[in-house]
Length: 192
Image (tube, rainbow, N blue to C red; front, side, top):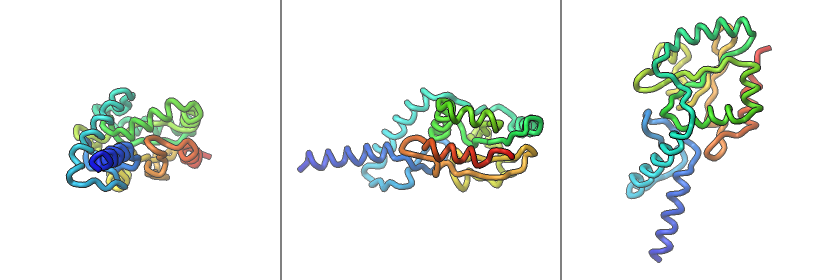
């Protein structure tokens, strides 16, 4: 009986670690939306989840720049977007966010998505971190991270007007992202 209980506990722990849905509680911690963790398991499960995520994060590119002036950068992107007739996608998040890094990696390693974004958008990784919360910029767009978590996508037209905010959770599939859902999102907001 102990072997069955141990096997069941290990199986549940594995499922919880690989759970795809997330809610951002702070820049250092993720909690699954759809998992129920018992009090006795929570510390071990959280520690294992954090260890696995840290190993994965170490391997991924870090596109967010904490020291960059986001207001100035967005203003320059608006000028460029007007000249090139492109929309702007702000991928809000930070290098602390495994889902933010996964999305960046997914787009960069999927030629179809990389081309789609390069052809129709100016793409910017809008930093949100304890060191630089870019509060003024986030306030301008209604603080979507508070509602959806991170990453969250803010789509601007070529004049800098907010035309859409996208929750990333609906684009997920397992521990990554669904190609067709992401492609639909990008295609939907191509400028006319």
